[in-house]
Each structure stands twice: as C-alpha cells, then as structure tokens.
Image (cartoon, rainbow, N blue to C red; front, side):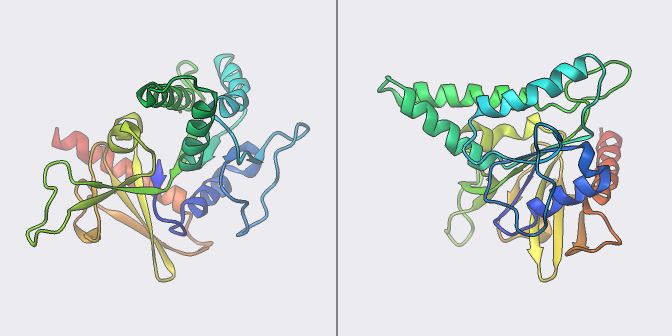
Length: 253
C-alpha cells in the first residue's frame, strides 16, 4: 500500500510500476477521477489490460473483475504481473454508501461490520503471493493506493506544548485505517518535496508522525526521485529498498 495527500505521487508511483512491468501485463482498477498526467491504454473486453475506470465500483464490482485473474492463477496461468487498485479511499466510501442504501437496520454498527467484512474480502482477493513452487493468490505485484486520515496518537495523544499529537494514517475508515498495516507486506508514505517525490519506507505496524518527517518511526530510509525522471524508476527503487529493510528487520530479530 502507498498512501499520501492529494498530489503526493501515488498515481505517479503506480505509473512507474506499470512502466517497469509493461502496460500489457498490468491490470489497473481506477476508482478516482480520470488520469490526466498521461494517456494510458484503456481496458476493453478485446484487450483486457491497462486502466479500467470504475468510479462507482463497490467491493463486489471489483471482485468480479478480479475473479478471472484468481481463477487463472489457480491454474498456473499468469494474466498479469501487476495489479493496481487506485484507490481504496474512494471505494471505501462508495461501498459504504451502497450498504447504507440497501440496509433496513437502524443499527449503524451492523453496517460498519458489513463494510469491514467487505474490505477483508477485497484485501484477501488481492493478495500477491508467489508463483513457485505453487500458485498462490494473484501471483503478481499488487499496489493499493489510499489518501490520508488523521487520528490521535494512540499512546501519546498530546504533545509537550499541549497540542494534539495527530498521525497520518491510510485513508480508510474504521479499523482498516488504524490497524490495517499488518495485512500488507509494505506500507509506504509518499510526499511531494519541490520537484521531487519522497517515498518513506516503513515496516508493518509502524506509524508516521505528522510534520516530523525526518524522524518517522520504523522508517530506516526513504527514496527520493525527481518528477518523471526517466533515469530512475521509483517502483524498482522501492523494491530494492524494501528488500534492504526486510534484511535489516531479519538481522534485528
């Protein structure tokens, strides 16, 4: 998962990933506003690759598109090397609106429970997994983008000056936004710095502290890439950096 403020480079990062693996090996489910920064190949029934716009998609709509990919993976047929969901924040709101519209219950907790279950089904279906020695899950790289939400720090809610100590977390409501890190191999935070994009790496379970970027907990390093730098692919750079983080985590244990 990669999350950040609007314009921080989330879609740009997904494009770098598509450039790295090839557009014809990419399935891009796009729930946000149309992409204007580049002209991607549009998904069609005859050419089922590239960007598929799904601005009003519920979780069930997304699962219907993913089901053939999962079925093929079980038969060890790899339809894609990259699957993108850009982004989960919009899908979260659309799906909850659909639940509320079709619900006869006055107990909102029941609606939130159904929403939580739906997101679990989606994340379960989008597991990446390895192709060898046996087919598992999608058998592809998976990137999910999210906006941000602010929550009070769970253990230090107040700063020394008495102001609220707020954290930036992935823009998913409920428990997924506060405790969903454990379901992803890596959670990245993206920010725009002048003409550069900085992507902070963090291990699962760590948190980002707002306005304290140079001392992010659980982030031993970050990568910085100039906008549209053709000499460096942000996705490839992150894969290398994440591998280093994983090795360091193993050593520390």
